[in-house]
Image (cartoon, rainbow over all chains, first blue to last red; front, side, top):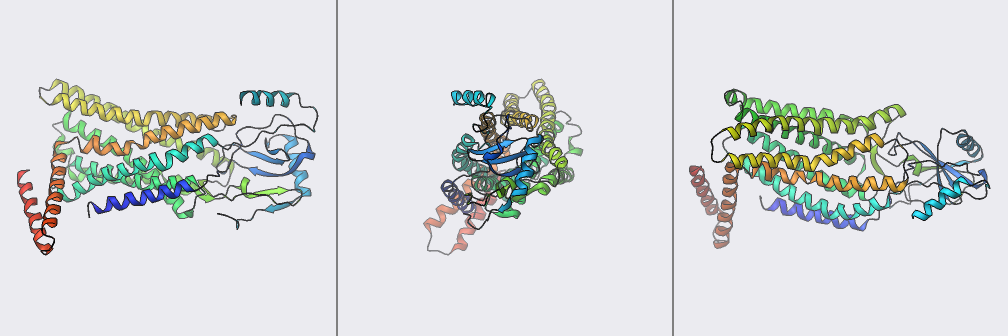
Length: 101
Length: 370
């Protein structure tokens, strides 16, 4: 029993390691600073909200643009103005979680 | 990369044409991710295996072989239990963190909570051990009254209860969820957005104020109670112990001093860098950083955290195996196992009850010798 349980544990750990190496790492990103210039409204396709209430350390509005995601400061007037304009136009896309894994 | 960021800066500052713009993208922490891909499966599993074997041996030795129950013995077993639970939780946390947290809400709260409880109880028990040695060596006259089994059980209960209480925020605020910025996107035109849903096991709050406060309070408490308090107690107790030992005329005193210094040095080497990083991280948390800086900071934290994890493999060596009594008991385990194995191999056809007899004879022999 004494020699049995550690070896079981070793095998379990090695299995866990093997499993772990085969999974791809796509970790949620976080904005850590903001854009210093104003975006053209025409470039914006949509937005999502990063909040300090979750895993990221700062609040941010992430605009999805033709050139990629843009981190902006929600304290700025133009940012909240864009958010309202997009919200009026947009329908929210609830991303489905069914195509996971 | 350098030239690229200079170009970005330049173009951002001179951007008057709204057709041309450069975006500040969210950080993906790519370097830290790839570092974790190496450290996670290999280094952390070695730490877990070594920690499991070392602390398992300490618990088995005390549970089965050590008849004289001392205050120190009870503390050492409790440290071993805390470290053992820690190294069992560690590979599961690492496994989940390397991909989308796949074990769900219960495992999230349980693993994060276990991690926190064992961190606190382990560190506080090390402080208790230093106090016990201080009373035994420096306050030797009070030693018999204070170092009773009754007191040590009460102290251990207090340590575990406070560790659990200190971990209540961790139990309460850690949740298993999809971060809202990856889950909900408001789009002007409906289009196919490719994404991979990703669950995390992280802090989650209902309002901003609680979020800011708790994100500072959790690591601050960990630094204060989980490091600086035990460190101060250990420095005070072991300084007094060393001074007393150096005054005494015992031929083994130099060895004892060396053991004490090793205990303190390993504690500081393992935990001081980690707690400094934790402090820096907590102070800078809400500040704005370029991605390269926050990625580098995370990488430093990942490496330094691994050094801190190493401590739970070293505790059995530093505390239990350095003791002469413990080593004797441990030798008996090895001998008994050898007897058992040799005998059962030689007489595999004879029934097993004989085996048990030999085992018991060897056990009584060795207990007479102690």
